Length: 314
Ligand code: ATP
Image (cartoon, rainbow, N blue to C red; front, top):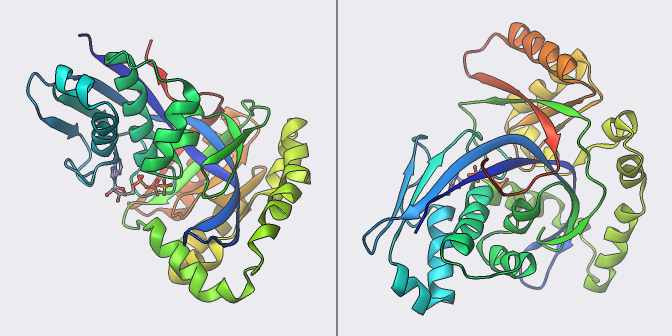
């Protein structure tokens, strides 16, 4: 049995709106998700034992059952017990390049890569829609991580409508290494503060997401209009993250002042990104930011928007 080398791209949220509370106690969301070419690299291979072993070069990534990649193996083992018993354990080696707990779906991407890798290695024959159903059991961002590109995500974030991929734009991403934000905290805080504004009529949820489907940001994406897209970036979670982490709010302000097409926090943060029309613009902005902030805790990257989800390394 051969091993597989997979690339798992990060995502940013061009748009994140919290609609309300669902009957299953999750939030109903409308998001526009976008893959970028900053990616983790994973190798998946038979362990030669019964064990699932996770190796990772990042000290904050858990190596046992708390790791989403580990959970992805357990899920496949539970779904296909006979095949799993036949093949035995798995080694997963994660080369972590996506910042951890950063709002970039690094863990979800790793889980998605394991689903794709095991599907190949154990010849399960699962289709993309079948992988997405399994992925949704592991986390709301896993289905998007599988397909990548540009998509509208609704429900908990697991229902996807692809829209034309944006690939001609770039981003500068920046994050303080001494700040990490737990996604459940961000949603809980939002509910505490804004829960009273949620619509009580669950049947009205589709109307809200329809507004985004036919709205100006999607029109900007269809037209590949970076200027329009940059002006319409939106993230409701900034309303709870910024008061608690003023450094993140300040970082957004500084990045926004430096230029680019638009600046926004990704997911539950703390990563902030600025959309740029060229790699040169993104690189210049990154250099200016690092001079302007001059804090050893600030890390910055540039990336290109990407049409790829999980794919094999060539
Ligand atoms: P999302 O945007 O999907 O909410 P995130 O980008 O904010 O995720 P992750 O990098 O996925 O955050 O990490 C969130 C937490 O998940 C980490 O604190 C870490 O303990 C845990 N975790 C579990 N598995 C992984 C993994 N394979 N890679 C990174 N973190 C993982």
